[in-house]
Image 1 (cartoon, helix red, strand yellow):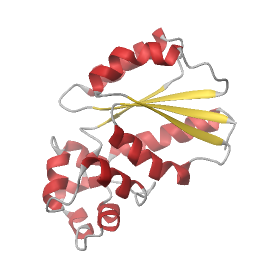
Image 2 (cartoon, one colour; image 1 turned 180 degrees about the horizontal axis):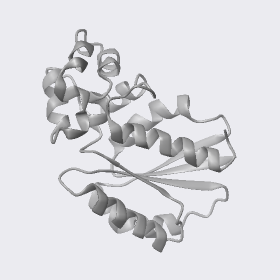
Image 3 (cartoon, one colour; image 1 turned 180 degrees about the vertical axis):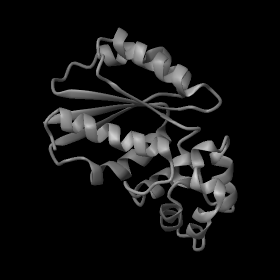
Image 4 (cartoon, one colour; image 1 turned 90 degrees about the horizontal axis):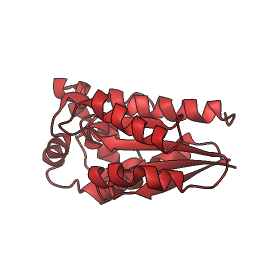
Length: 189
């Protein structure tokens, strides 16, 4: 059995992936989550935690928000940390600007997950056709849901509903295709 180990900056990413991955992963791929206390903690402790992982048949995925940083610099820095840990093939993905951009890329999932009607129709608006451009997606999501979105519980609820296809967030689609590639290269698809 293959393990897919996710190094995440916080618990909301774990809540999202726990709901979303059962639809994506084959039955013989087991997800594991290593949750850090923010992006600084992730970068500080990543090498030690990755080096210490001793189980065979393990592939690693590192997920971090871009926030206000430069996506390419962040990705290069995280990849360098993975290389330092001896895991050159680790998949590094950046949520642009933040994980909430992924939710704004699938407003039907937001509507369904949070049990709010009328949200999905906003997908046609220019700012929701390319949510990775929004500098403060969490604020937009809170506004469009009239305060019903809460980071942890909202991620859990939306994660069960988010579609793996057709999301308007480019960084979400790159994340999904990256995981599919890792699984395929490991011979599990």
